[in-house]
Structures are given as structure tokens and as C-alpha cells.
Image (cartoon, rainbow, N blue to C red):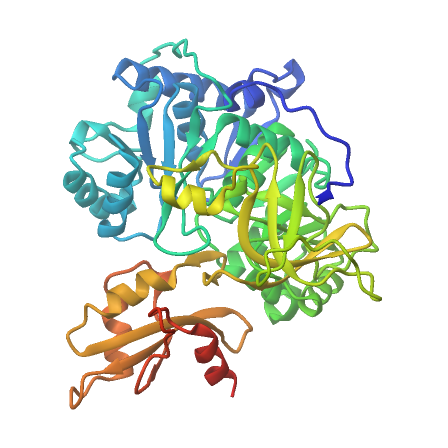
Amino acid sequence: MFNSPFPDVEIPELSVYDYLFTTLEDDDLARIALIDPATGAETTYGQLRGQIDAFAGALAARGVEVGTVLGLLSPNIPAFATVMHGALRAGATVTTINALYTAGEIEKQLKDAGATWLVTVSPFLAQAEAAAAASGIPADHLIVLDGAEGHPNLRELLMEGNPAPEVSFDPATHVAVLPYSSGTTGIPKGVMLSHRNLVANVAQCQVSLDLSHDDRVLAVLPFFHIYGLTVLLNLALQKRASLVTMPKFDLEAFLTNIQNYGCTYLYIAPPMAVALAKHPIVDQFDISTVHTVFSGAAPLDQETAEAAGRRIHARVLQGYGMTESSPVSHAIPVDRTDIPVSSVGPLLPNMQAKLVDTLTGEEITETGPDGATAPGELWMRGPNIMTGYLNRPDATAETLDADGFLHTGDVATWHEGDYFTIVDRAKELIKYKGYQIAPAELEALLLSHPKIMDAAVIGVLDDDKQEIPKAFVVARPDSGLTADEVMEFVAGQVAPHKKIRRVEFIDVIPKSSAGKILRKDLRARENA
């Protein structure tokens, strides 16, 4: 077993709200917490806490209580922080919803999570209304932050002046957020993350990520993903840094915001590193304020990371995690220049890990002549590991063992410098621009097409070395089915990141005797 090289950190027995906001000092109240480049509006920490309390009071006055589930469908805007933390302050559980989801996908999540409220913004109102109606959520429980006729809006709720409620729950067991993840396989499941899970991960991250109140963080990675929620939003708020919010990634706007607001810390996914390393437009902006770039959500290769760092004169670091670990489990510390950026760094404090041979089930501990272990599936445990999957004891048992170890499905090696490298994914998830895509979900959709007899989906690399979904399709004889027809069929029913981007017609999908798709054979065909 491998232990974190860091001493354990104290994890306060507090709710997320108490951890982040009751600890504000007088000097913090006037600090800028959030900046909205769309309007130039700034929100201080004192104002933010006041808004959070007022929103919690408005929810409580409408019957929201400990255990109420509230859906949050919003891009990165300052109001996201008010809603998220106001709902947690009221004792509610927040299920964060991908802003790109279709009405059908939103409906599935709302129903599965048992949500009785939904909060959104007017650009998403059409799909939000359809999903709410199909889920039995009435119009007065659909809050439209920027206002829409027939629905409550944020300004009205904050102006009511209702006091924040007194609530009581156990931070170790009460579910704070319910993001959805495909886990190690299959259709998305609700990941139950307690207040303690979220508090622990913010406390753990501070050992490796040297964020301070003088930093300005460009918040472009979505808050509705646990990476954005924990590492961008909550960690920045706990450190009293300033967040510059961006609703979506656009390279020119990204660079403009860095230049205009003097951003110092960038949290990115690998495609953004490719842009920083290669795109000619980068040279047209002064982004010299940036001192640190931290990449996560998908593997970043050494060459791209080093090229990006050289070009913008900043240190580039990488980490690893899963929704099920709140999410960060590994990160390269800022002072460990000996660790290659292609690795994911050491375990965070309070964590333990095992590497397990995927064939024999034996634990791997010995290192070879190169100072590294043989590859094995990464298992890990710590105070940031989820309490389980919502209403899925079967899936929970498959992923969390009796000793509390999360079986990640990722294959890693440990190095004598006490750091890990992820070498492969045993699980079949495709990661496109940091978004997780379950092949099983796309395969089920493809099989519903009348001209498709069988189908399989794998991740392949495009010209930018970015993983994209490719479908192998067995068409009905003489159907005349085309690749464009297949791609259009899928695109009309899923969020943009889930689109099939390549299609190959094949005579038969390779399968095992048990009927499982042999994706390794498809990958071999792709690489032949």
C-alpha cells in the first residue's frame, strides 16, 4: 500500500457553508470574490455571504429543508456561487446539471435525483421548462435567475430579506452535491458527495496548490463539474482569491480576460494547453500575469505541457481525480520540479492507494530497475471518497470495497519519487474536452436507429490528439445508410460533446463469448 508523502491535514467537522463563509475575517469582507466580465460587476466576499444567506432564507420560506434536492442548470456566472452555497446553507442537496444537456437528458437526471426544484437562466429556459414539466416540477419551483414570466427570479428572492434558516445535519453523511458520473462504466449515476467529502478535498488540495488571496483565477472550466466546483470555486473562495467567471471557452475571450483582469492562476483541460502552446493568437495578448497553469480532467502529455509553459512563461502542473473522489486525489506540488509534468504527482494528504494487477488481483509493490512499479489498477481511499451511488447499491459495491477503497478503473504506476503516472484506462469512458462520455449510452442510442443492426463506440484521437467518439456500425443490408446520417441521428438527441464524430461501417462487431464488445479488437483495427 502507498501512503501520501504529506502529513495528514485537519479536516474540520463543518458544513461547506460554515467552512467557507463563517470563517471570513473582517479584512476579507471587502475583498473581491467574483468578477463578471460580461458586465464588469464585482461581488465582494461580504456581499456574497449576504446573498447566500438571503437565498437560503428564500428557499426555506418556500419549504426547502434538509434533504430537499435542487437541480442547478447554469453556466459559470457569479450567481452560480449564490445558488450553490445558498442551497447548501438551507440544507438542500444540489444536483449539478451539464449546461449542454438536452431536455431529455435534464429530465432523466432530475427524475433520478428526485429533484423537486430547478434553477436555471433564461437562455436555457426552453429545455429547462420541458424537463421540469416532464419531471413534475411546477413553474413556481423553477427559478430563472435573470427573470422569466411566471417564474421566481434571483433579485426577487434576495429582496425578500428572509433570514437564513437554522439547520442541523451530520456533515459526514449528509449529501451536499449529487453530480452525475459514468463511474468506471455504463450510464451516468448520481455520486453522493457529503459536506465532509467537499470540505476534505479543499483542505487536502491546499498542500499542493499554492493559491492565495492575491490570486485571480480565470473560472472557465464548468462549475457544474466537480473539478470546477471544488478546485475552481470552493478552493478559490476558501483562500479568498478572486474568480473571473466565463460561461464558455472561447480562446480570444479567454486571453482577453486574462489580460484585462490580470489573472494569475489558470485551471484548464488539455485542449486549452494545446491552444496555449500552438495557437498564433496567443502572442497578441499580454498574459504575463499568469504564474501557474493546472491541468486536469484528462491526460496532458509532456510535450504539450512543456511547450505551453515555455511560451507563456508559467509553470504547468497536472493532477488526477474522479467525480467519486470529490475529485482530486493526486496533484504535482508547486515545489516538486523533479516530477515530470506527464505524471499526476503524489497522493494528497490523508489518502492511501494500492496498485492491483488486473489479471491476478495481486497487489503490486515492487519497483523495477527504472524505479517504477509494474502497471496496476489504482485503488484509493480517503476522506474525500464518495459515500456511494444514489439508489445503486450494486454499482456502489462494485466500485467501493469493504475496506473503503475506490476501484478507479484506471491503470497507473508508482515511482520512487513518490508520484504516480496514469498509463491507461481500464474503464471504457471517453473523455472529450474534459467531458465524460459513456460508450454504452451512445451504443444504446445507435441501436435504436432502424437501419442499424449493431454498433460499438470507442474513443480515438483526432488530429489535435484529443479523444473523440467513433462509432463502428453494422448497417442493415441495402439500407443505404451513410456516415452523415448516423452522425446527424445522434447529434439530434445528445449534448454537443457526446456527438459521434467518426463512423466506420463494419461487417460484424467483435464480441466475447459472453457477448461483451471486444473494444481492444476495435482499437487494434483503428491502429492497424
